[in-house]
Image (cartoon, rainbow, N blue to C red):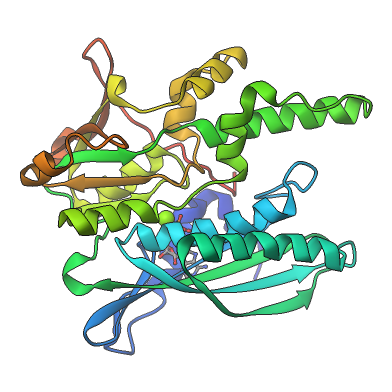
Length: 344
Ligand code: ADP
Ligand code: MG
């Protein structure tokens, strides 16, 4: 191919590239119920749906081992995949874990990684059922696949949000991003002066959000108990704004969220201010909190209105009204999707 025909991948972006790949393939099996485009693929196995999701974590791109303890990395690798199963309102049951590693890693290091994997398997009640192990010229690569299940009438896609539905989010947002800023700063301080010890005492909550994210499988179980099926759902891996765009686009609706309803932790807000960052930037575009963003029908509101960890941040509107954040003063401002773009 000549250079004139070369298209830079960063022109397409991550989602443009995935669309290009998806275009090439058509379904060959009836059991393939829903393929590319949601948090997990949906396979019709008869009386229920099987869910499959896979994610890759690369040293230098997704984690930095100078401040990411290997046992936390093992836990996080599982949690982020279980989170994608949760985002379909499903229950994860199995995982496979594949590793490419260089000779820089000792048995003790790999042991520490698998201690974390095991802790996550216990926390989410999933079984490690396979994987692959190979050499890497440098660095560590981790690929995890999660397999789950969901009753056919309980599945939540990104595409089911309806006008007047209530937009909900679990937990608090922006913490993982601010935790990363703290870890990066302490790394720079350490590189400049190796005598310096990292100062993390004031940032324990947000650093924990970065190093020890939890998949919200607990919420999936609670929704089951409450007999609520979200009309749409996605997990927040790239940032609230980006995930809202996915819900709005896939559901063909508009969404208004309210600035004063967005949940955050005081430790996140204080740290953002210290870093001279607008806390809203971390909340909207930070990512990696792995909370769940979902919509429910107004009829279900009574059942969850007192839930301490579900926040009602806005409403679904007609598509023509777009995606907006209504500021504390009542002005709607269009929300751009500035999630993480690994190719820019
Ligand atoms: P998430 O952030 O929930 O993990 P992604 O944005 O990574 O989701 O992926 C969105 C969708 O695109 C998923 O259905 C995923 O399986 C699919 N996808 C991503 N990369 C590829 C690829 N290289 N080939 C096929 N499908 C892909
Ligand atoms: Mg996801």
